[in-house]
Length: 335
Image 1 (tube, rainbow, N blue to C red):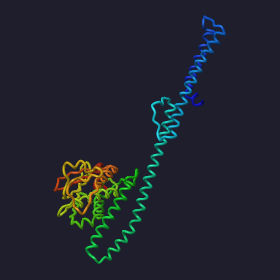
Image 2: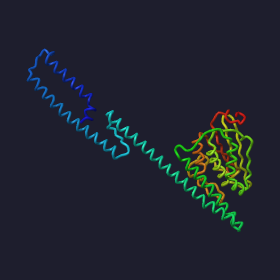
Image 3: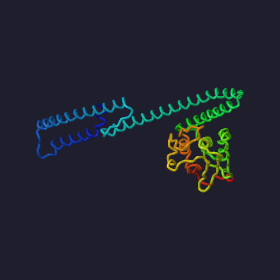
Image 4: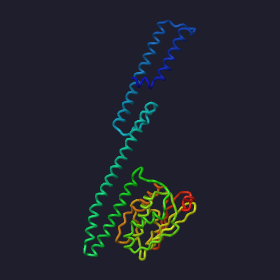
């Protein structure tokens, strides 16, 4: 009842004011004087009508209030076009906001638990991998030792990429944008993939133009370059060459160019889609998951960079990373 009185307080005040004016008019202001008995009879009839309307309104209000209160207790969100009362609407909006924040917190905690699990699992799996490396070093079969080393390198690389990918899916992540040496990031990525680059006979060309500063996160930039180098290894041809160069105008644009099998023109618009593997013939030693360039685009978006690609089938693939900052930041001499 208190809730109904609170919601209808304006209507009640107006009704009382009308009743007071009505009585004042007929008792003192009207030229036609009413007998007290007549006035009391009129009041009785009026109060009967008002009472019926009040009970009816209170009943409707009670049913509606119980309805959305039950909904708030049993459902995550309450959506109703019948909430025309400001007080009810504010209550429901506050409930929905609390429910949204609760779900966001729960979702974040689930992601955090998943990342913690992946991190623990990754560190635990490193022990048997290290043991396998030591066992392989004592392997007297040179061919088998080489094959096992290749598979161990793949496992180590995939393990590292899985850790980085798990971090990338976190809402906040551990991203820190600052001035970094682009050449140093490239060298780190090349070092990470050195086994496969040497195994496939890659010629690596790092031009002097990459000796600049860019605003980025070094860890994530190296991860992006790891993915691009991995793609170059997967889709290489004979006498593979991987070139890193940079052009600085208003923006700094890093070019990662390989002379591999390239990409069909009709597939260029889809290469950054999740799970897209394309139709070109691939090197049978490496399987494609279709996730590499997808993660490159995702990380680039998180860092505020732009990734584009140009390619010609059976000729080359050139992937460009644009660091969208003022050109004055890029030169080492500006330090």
